[in-house]
Image 1 (cartoon, rainbow, N blue to C red):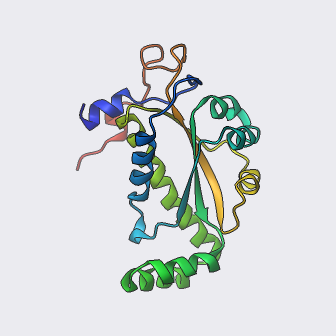
Image 2 (image 1 turned 90 degrees about the vertical axis):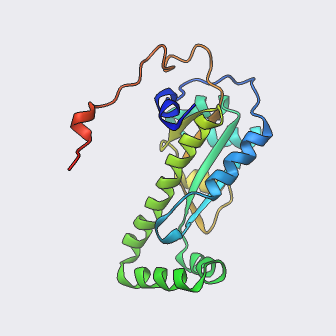
Length: 199
């Protein structure tokens, strides 16, 4: 199946099969795909937390607003977090990035107010979400992107200090009676001519 067919097939799962396990090799592949996600100047200001532990997942579900049921049903929850402690992230930049990229980041950091820098870093994490959603369908998995989480409570449950959860993604196999399946609820997008311009 080519990339266009995969995207045509992909949809947001609203109900998961709580009994169907995800092969671990698919989870490991998704981890590596996320690690390889692109970001501006390859800054990689993220942490991806793969939650398979049911007890932890239940705690996160309880602070996932209208997504509680999906988090409980799905076999995997991926939490996407951004570097929030800029001093701690500076150590990452200094120790893990090559000199040219380090210098580039330091120039950007010097030119932006802290709030703007944090917004820019968060935007990079959203790029990885697009990669993850596409990768999930390519791996034969269903997924749900979820901004509806209580970030501070996620942070406490996951015992994070230097990173801040932005959103999560439920991953698993959709239930046969998921009302949002493509065959039940066809994909709805704006018309090509209204969103694509060719010059």
